[in-house]
Picture (cartoon, helix red, strand yellow):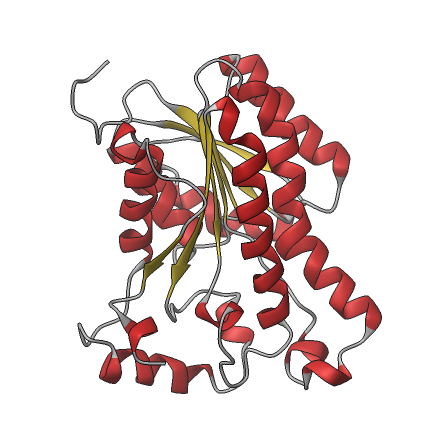
Length: 259
């Protein structure tokens, strides 16, 4: 093992939510590999396979697994494979969010019951389901659970709509899970990137306005990249972050200061 507290040599874990080169999951898997970790990387649908397989070399040739988080058998298979391969999991990165466009593009007060339930299930409760499956695989040395949130969970961001309440629920779940699993040495965090050109974010109305605002009004006058997010995840996963848990970490060039 390395004496460098930022090294992830010997660490193993799961990165969930890869869709293409612009995915936050890609930046995370890439950075984790570069820090020495070994990963299982998941994608949600067979249609995504042609977009994710060309990325394998840049992520250190991790094992890819199909995993729709709404399918319990696929989640079970993912963690069973991690147990078979390593006997443990040191980290789980959950980079998954979804809401039906008809609900996302309307007012929160008008969202459908089914749309709200689906957004909450995929974007929030699936993190809880993954945490539950990871817990027994983190018993000896602890581990780190990380999800992706957004400032719209705390303050109203125009056109973020339904995802605001959903991400607020995710942040609350993060705090409670961190408290429940902390005694076992399991750390739990939310990472809050600013506007990034991901496939999921492109579904927001007037997304280009958020991009422009981030580029012109954030203190650093830039957007965060998926690699920036990945580097933050490395820090939180490494021994350098051993005393941190239950936090929301902004990786947005300081944009949250200006909302």
